[in-house]
Image: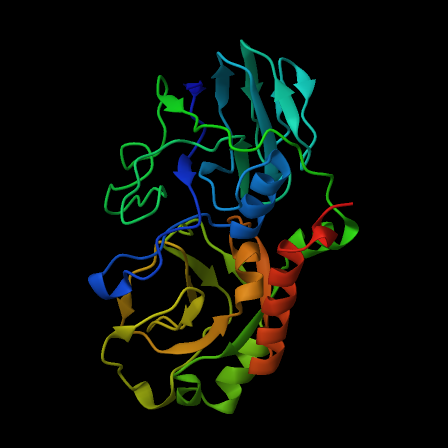
Amino acid sequence: MSVICVLEPGLFTTVQDLGREGFGAMGVSASGAADAASLRVGNLLVGNLDGAAALEITLFGGTFLFPDAAAIVLSGSDFGAVLDGVAVEMWEPVDVRPGQTLRVGATRSGARAYLCVRGGIAATPFLGSASTHILSGLGGFEGRALKKGDTLAVGDVQDNSHSEKLSRAATNMLLPRKILRVTPGPQGDWFDARAQRLFDTGVYQVTEDANRMGLRLVGPAIARANGRELISEGVALGAVQIPESGMPIILFVEQQTTGGYPKIANVISADFHSLGQLRPRDEIRFEMVDWDTARNLFREQEELLASKELFA
């Protein structure tokens, strides 16, 4: 079994796969890759199943030594990675020789990059997933972000073939959006016409408090109608909550599974990957769409990810 040695971990690097859905009733959120589309495509390009575990690198990368030969793909945002000083192209399989070192710099675009290695990162599953759940300290590599000196095992290779380069359609799909499409939330009727207009037309900035649990925004304050209070209920990934401050919070992959703030909207599934690439100080807007549009956009995305049209 080959390994990857962590010489420098970067700002916040964790092991992630597609998460552990189905345990919300137990209070365990799905976790998983913040930009699942980039993880899936990166894995397919390197010859893995799309849900194989990889390294999720946030804002600033680290340095990784490969004592053994490996094949890798960097997906997601461009972090200016170099392999023994030679630039690594995004979204392209790269053969790594024994003893080479990969250095991943600071982001040049979005928030996260994925280091996918053929065979995947080998980690003991927790509730059926290798994803790191930081809040509970479970899953991934010892339930935490990587540290200097960690050694990660690489899984057995099932398929030695490389996939083709990405098609233009795939590249367009993976471009992060700054206008997030949303459907009406379960408490949408709690907000009057003025509040809805503010939400639909306002520009919001991602704050420094944004993390894998939620994205706190600052911008036009949304007032709740009549000061109504909500009994805590189940919440979904991408829910847009409005707390007393009126500043929206978008629930993210390590969200709490219940909440007592009214939800004015929910980001559509096809735009979840864009949430994963938002950085502090990024500006976003919301665009309300109907349920049929949301379903069609998600279906189109999934059909592309499962088709040969993903590659050139």
